[in-house]
Structure formats: C-alpha cells, structure tokens
Length: 321
Ligand SMILES: NC(=O)c1ccc[n+]([C@@H]2O[C@H](COP(=O)([O-])OP(=O)(O)OC[C@H]3O[C@@H](n4cnc5c(N)ncnc54)[C@H](O)[C@@H]3O)[C@@H](O)[C@H]2O)c1
Image 1 (tube, rainbow, N blue to C red):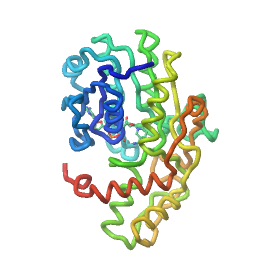
Image 2: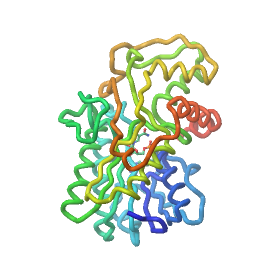
Image 3: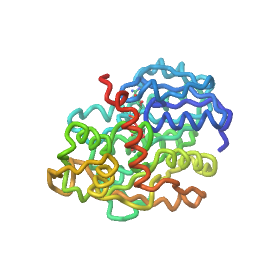
Image 4: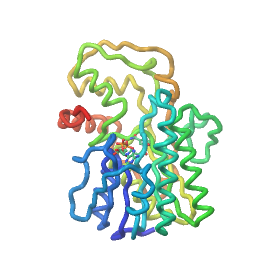
C-alpha cells in the first residue's frame, strides 16, 4: 500500500522505535501526528519538522483519541508498556497499556473511518518455541509473560477488527531492537551497572541465553518494505529480526570491550534471567526477506551504536522523570 504524502498517526512517537518511524515518515513526505504521554518517551526524540504535530496525552482517554484521529489515513501503533521483565510486579499494567489501549486506538479508527494499522508485536508471543528459527506459523499455545500475553491479545483484536470492520492490519513481531534512542533492555542495564561500578557486573541467569537483536534502522526499513509491498491480506504478519543470535556472555564481552572495562561477572544462575525470560530467541525472517529486505547492521555494530548513544546522551537517559 502506498501511504507517502498521507496524514498518519504514530502512537508512542516519542519512544525509541516510534521516533525513528516518525523520522522515516517525514522523509517520505507524510504529515504526522505523534501521540504520546511521555511516560517512557522523550520530548527530545520527537522530530521537529513542521510536518509533525505532537499531541501530549494518554491513549486511555478515548475522547482525546477520537478527536486526534480526524482525517487520518494510517495508524502506526507503537505505544505500549514495552517492559517484559517486571510484568509480575504490576499485573494490570500490560492489560491496560497493551490491550485496553490497543482497543481504544481501534475504536478511534472506527469512529473516524480509518482502516489501516501497523502494530508492534513481539517475538515473545512464541513463548519457548520448539522450532528455530521460529516462523510466523509456529504454534504458541502457552504464554510465559504478561507482556507477551497482552501482545497476543492485541494481535487478536487487530485480526477481529480486520475481519469484522474491514480493517487492514500489519502485525510486526520484533526481536529486541538496538541503536540510537534505545532506553530499555539489557544493554542499558549493563551500561548503568558498569558506570556505577566497572569492576563487577551482576548478570541475570547463567549468561548462556541466546537472543537475537536488530538495529532500529533495519527495523524501520523492514516495516516500510512490508507496508509498501505486502498488502494483499487483511492481516499481514511478519517477523523482524536478524538471522543470528548472541549469547548474553558474548554481548557482555562486546559491551566491556567498548567501554574499556574488565568486570568480574556475578551470575544469578539458571537458564532464564527472570520468570518469562526465553533462553533462546531466533525468528525466521524468510517471509520478510522474500520482499527484498536485508539488515545492514551486524549485531556487534548495533551494540556499539547503542553504547555510543548512551554515552553521548547519559544526562538525558539518566534524567529523573
Ligand atoms: N524495543 C524493543 O526491542 C521491542 C521489541 C519488541 C516489541 N517492541 C514493541 O515496540 C513498541 C515500541 O517499543 P519501544 O522500545 O520504542 O518502547 P518505548 O517505551 O521507548 O516507547 C513507547 C512509547 O509509548 C508511550 N506510551 C506508553 N503508554 C502510553 C499511553 N497510555 N498513552 C500515550 N503514550 C504512551 C511512551 O511514553 C513511549 O514514548 C512497543 O509496542 C513495544 O512493545 C519493542
């Protein structure tokens, strides 16, 4: 589907991935409305181009949403509670921020006759799969985190609205993204700990978990490649990730080398870092690659770019909210 030049909404457009999507939309000639409540996003990340309008507000406010979607052609729904690890300490948060908010977005679309939506889901929906690399068709009968549960539910809402109201949906299941404006995940956790004390590093699990990562620019190019080229189905589901994995220990080696530190590693033990941690994530991106997409950044380049952003923006990302 061609959306260049159209009026679009990006929820979570002040966040890590959403702000890069906004940059790409501006470059493609779109008029962009960013909706964000700045809970985990940053005003400083929002594109300052005149074609961008920022509405600070909460997606739980249906009246605000209904007003914001007037005249829009396409919605990129990125806003969410993106944290997996601490889900069990606030069990309603994923339901409210990831399920209720998604339905609010769909209802605002319905109220304004908007039919097209791209949604940021996660590779965590596969739980602990038995197939690697894991294709989009892999069964995921058992969920291991409230976060992934909420994303499965949100995917279900999109499919139901597509079937019931004639919506067209693009669902993207991401691996962990890295790169500029990264503000949550294992690299910032290690970076923070090593800034406090470069001589030791507490590691969740046994360090042998194998994860797949992807640079945020590669993620954004994958999203636009798919929307541009794959629109024949009402619901278009695509994994986004690289074909390789990195052991947590190898990630620590790259981080330590880049920061010039040699910490003693203190493992909490066990093959999972927390309840819901998946010891192995590697998504099959054959479907995406068939559209002509390929990642440009290696895993190591992506980690180094992330650390450069964190070092250059330490005051911003460490700012008390
Ligand atoms: N970063 C990753 O590696 C990753 C991996 C898989 C999936 N995802 C998904 O991609 C999306 C973007 O993730 P991110 O890493 O950019 O996260 P992020 O936290 O940087 O961005 C989320 C944005 O949504 C905003 N937001 C949250 N709740 C809101 C609400 N109720 N009303 C208005 N704004 C709200 C936040 O302020 C923030 O700017 C999320 O849906 C996340 O679940 C991210």
